[in-house]
Image (cartoon, rainbow, N blue to C red; front, side, top):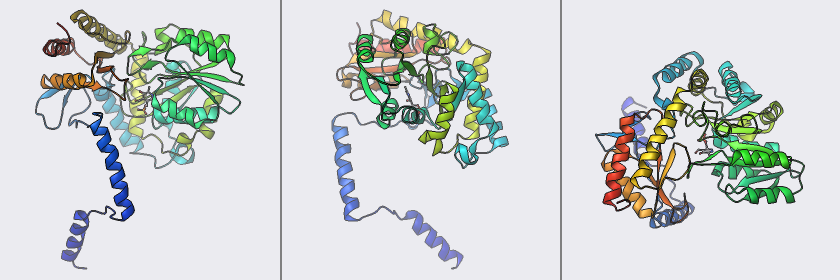
Length: 419
Ligand SMILES: Cc1ncc(COP(=O)(O)O)c(C=O)c1O
């Protein structure tokens, strides 16, 4: 084949769509399009804004040439664009390569994977840690590996979707208690028979910024000989005085049996998740946990991000103090201005608006003023409880926090949310 013919063939391949045109494929398209239309009609279709800068407090968004202040990332400590973290991560790329092309147990474990697991164990004061590609995977892989039909699991009704899915996969008896309701939980613990009982809760619930009554949950666990599991995705690294999370917030460090968390939010924001807890549990998960056994190892630059962040957090609690000061400033000023902010003491600050359309309009008006926030409505939150979820970061300056508050007040008055 001449070079000319090769180019023509290549170009025609590039241009050609390989989309199947069979009757079955057409039927599939129609069925799916109907669902998509339904979602659009319900006003709950999610479109994605394209960020053209790195993740930080001031971002650039495709289609806009202005700098936008970002108040909707889980970048609680501002470490996603920290120069020291990026530099450390780049060096790992040079030294340890782009990826492992293997799962951990075949040939995918490097010295840095073991180093990160050991640092996470030290940070949480636990015996051992196992890394996953995400906390979604950690939640999907824990319950099935650990619990049998002889056991029972007690789960808060508003736990994260990944916990719900993980519990679905296991064969234990399942109980769902009312959100943060200790009486309901106690009744279930009291009346159920099982070899092992495991209470499962988010440490911090991300839609409301509210916190599980963990001290009292641990009391109930002691009373009924149960274990406690918490998902700390919205707590690790920044919540509690030194960022140890919900246990530290309640001053009960070490009472929880098992912690799952993410490297994809405060801890550098790359990706990855983990389970930390008793050595025998971690040993067993390495043998049996399906998302660990059958999925690729975390890539070296991501692992290095975690290592650097762990070192920084174990060195100083300055960042968790800063996010706490920023949060206090925002919550106090917004409440004084007449807004209702859900949750307690947490950088997730949901500004409650009620009406879905109002929440969406409010967010659009904020964007016109250069503030990027997102309106949440049904089905993500209950009907009539639409809100704008503001997320505060240690990287926000006092001026940026004040700018956000000023925009809220201006839009709030314009849309008659406050007077
Ligand atoms: C409470 C909670 N658990 C688990 C996850 C999943 O974490 P990852 O992004 O690491 O999969 C999230 C992320 O949204 C979360 O908010």
